[in-house]
Image 1 (tube, rainbow, N blue to C red):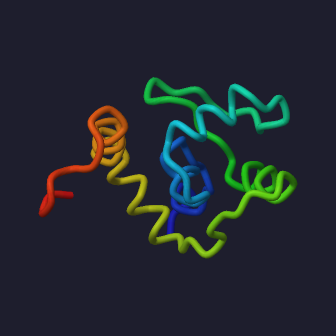
Image 2: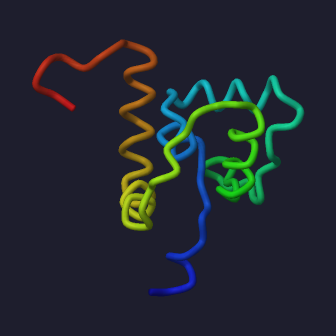
Image 3: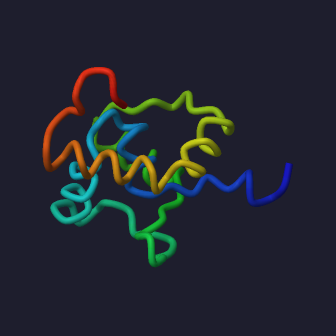
Length: 102
């Protein structure tokens, strides 16, 4: 396993998935709460956080989250980031997809 695979870096989508909320909620947290962690980097695709910082914030503020994410789930989540982001944006604008589509 490479060092890159071990880094617990997360973006809006990964935080939302782990916290059981939609992506716009994470955006709101960042804008409304001064104690929300600062990103470790701002990339063209968006900000990136160190998961332990976000996890600590979720615990401190009493928000539930899924601490059981495996490294494989994190990796798969990252590989499908663009596709997932587009799907979430569609759902945010137009609601659920028609039955049978995902």
